[in-house]
Picture (spheres, rainbow, N blue to C red):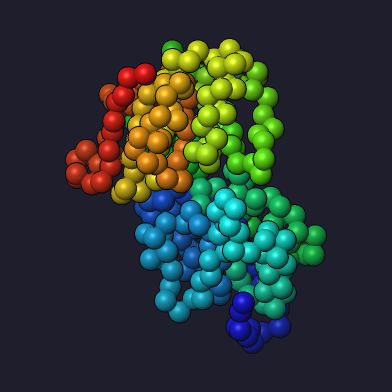
Length: 267
């Protein structure tokens, strides 16, 4: 994959860097510094074009992302690649969408690196469950509506290994990552375990990007919304009373007429 040659004999360092949910302005100063000083950048599918435009032209950058059913490089091979290049003296920016430790497999990569004695650091990023919700006018907690929030990954090879009964009874905000293909199961399981079918819910497509779209409805019509408006990944699912604030607090794009959209549909 690489034909780079590092001249010095020292061992390199790996930075597991959170790129945030898409808006380049949400990068931390440390994340930008890592991007600018790395010898190699390895980036995921959810790293936006705006962020990729900040990569130095002289720095080799390689796509190592994963989509459902399409991994350009298996995780095990990626782990080996990180070890190999760091041992050859390269300083690597391993750039991930959102936060490396929130459904980002950063912990797995860090364990492998530390086991062979490679220096590694974590640079936290804004996770989409907070960033995309905020850009949609949906506070994940709000006095009188929700005192807590639970993040859930809806990504699974076959079935979701989730305690649906516990989720349905929490009575606070639920945020499902990578949930677009699992909308029927999310609806059916939550309602079957006691959540009201008319609980407010939202779908946020391309959160924190200029093409962001937000659709609100109820748990019962999420699948209908996704089909009607032909939503694509990445789409975040938010369930809870806080979704009712989306219209009142909607702000992103409203002043600049960017391609953000807010749609209220009744159940």
